Structures are given as C-alpha cells and as structure tokens.
Image (cartoon, rainbow, N blue to C red; front, top):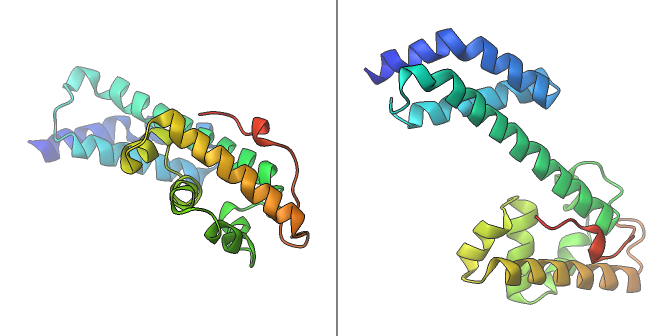
Length: 174
C-alpha cells in the first residue's frame, strides 16, 4: 500500500514539485536535491498523508526546505562577511591554514558551538539542546566566540587568509 501511495504521489505531483523546487532554488541541480528530499520525507511518512492532501503537503514541505536552504545560505554569508572571508565557499573559508587554529584556542564550549553552527550548519535551538544550554546562552556563546576570533585574527594580522570587518551586531540573530 505504501509503495502504491508513493508511486501515485511521484507520478502525479513529482513534475510540479520539481518545477517549484528548481524555480525556488534557482538551479536544476539544487531543485532536484530539494525535490528528492521532499519525496524522501513523504516516503518516511509511510502513507500517513491522506490522498486528498498529498499535493499541498508536498508543496509545503518543498517550500519549507527551500526556505531553510536560503536561510542557511544567508547565515553563512553573514558569517563570511563577519569574518571577512575572501573565499566564496563556506568550506574553503573554514579550511584556510589559520582559521581553525584560531578556533582551537577557544574554550571547549565555544569551539563546540562554532563547530556545530559553522561546519554542520545546525540551528541554534538544536545546538542548545545538544549542549544543555538555553538558546539565548548558545547564541551569546557563538557571538562572543566570533568576536574573540575576530579580535585575535585582527591582532595577529591574519590578512592573507581572513580580512576582518564589522562587529557582532552585523550577524543576524536566527
């Protein structure tokens, strides 16, 4: 029954979901990824979406995934501006020869929050749950750690790898 439910959804609504995702994401590759994730979540529901609500459910999930992707991209861009990364790609920016060395100098709690937020792109609420802190304390730890990184990098002239600009107030809260 679940296979038939999924096949019906895929054949009937798959093209529309893919078109929406491609349009929203701005590229066919990213659109295909989001559409695939949408249908993976539908499959994980195990046929618990009533047939008359499938289309609305799929579009809503696809929309939410697209929004999450764009929101994450804005956060990464804001952080790159905050640290003044000369690299466009988040992974490249955080694999510069000195960047993680500065992070290693932070206290354990700050390192963990930075890692979970930057490398794993986790939301503050999830990081708070994982670390046993409140969300506001987690955000404060993150922003203070970013300030420490900015100050240390500026004082030690990390110029070739990271150019520092702005203050913590430039990084938007989640």
